[in-house]
Length: 432
Length: 76
Image (cartoon, rainbow over all chains, first blue to last red; front, side):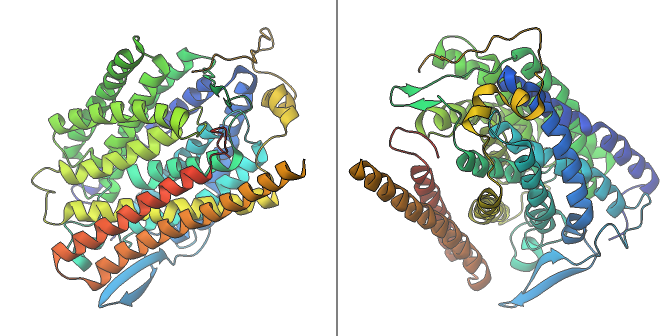
């Protein structure tokens, strides 16, 4: 498939413009994660982002691009029970054979240098304050070189999930225009695996209860959410054009849906925390906003603005509830709220795409197709990510030493703090 | 001392077993979903088997959450 719907040149120009804005999503997520961590690891958090982006781009361009492929490009498939199961791309490594022009495969490759980096930034939020820089880079290489391209091939590369409609009569196949599954749920489930493997921060859980360790800069967190919004709109728009067959005429709908969803997600989280704790919580509102953005990625093209508003509201409330559930009940220490924002928000967006799809996309079996995709994320991607990170942990321990955690990752791994003028670190946090 | 070490070892072994069981449930649930897709034609039967597969996955997730919590509620 080397043609794009609508006027090709104009569409390619729109896609290029959107891709140029995509790094804003990474910047927003990076500074929000930095603000949600401890001040003594702030510099480490930002350096990790830069290193992880580089590793993700390299791993994805080296082998990921070959395994992910693009509809119409070479792929491996098996025939089982009369159906064709296209499971992995078969292109050459390191971009060989890919026309580096304004063709859709080349634009998709460019976009995905950023989206794979976005997926790789998500686990950084869950491993904040105790995940070694080297381990984060190695884990990113596994994510960007294998897990992401494999799943993205199934969804965006003409793989078996995309063909659920043609091969198995399930609606239009698994739909995910903006990457709620391939970027956010894959990143969020990897974040869960990382949080389990590296364990909680020292002093987080004890026999007395769970300590509330607040983020060190709520302004960074809020600004990150604001900065991420235009980037998210751009990623959703470019994804809709490149992977969901949308024309540029659909972009206002994508942008309106994404913006509505994000705004109402933040509002829902504010209302939820006001109801729950008596006052709105700034960092949970940002979490709600990010969760609603992740949800919008799954359905931005497929639903009406009214449905997008409802989906954003639900996502914001769900994320605020889920952050508390993971922290207080399930014993998962996720300082950035990455698991709730991206895994829970993204999976909710994929379900919502099946539940609220507009008439053009509401075909028979669509909901089942979405559920097959969600089952694949939980039943395949989570064990795969956990297994890879577990193996890595045995070869190269991922958690920093107790001394390093006490010192802070800035001093221990980098030798200098982010805020040398201010050196106040608390060790005692109120129990909840 | 010996007792606490034995208990800790027992907990670790049990936790490993739980983790393995949890991942087995996740993969089995996914296999059921794929099997329903490949082998069943009727939408009702497909839907029922997919629901069963997803229920198994949720069970697996619950086991995994349990297996990653140490006695003090600590995640490991």
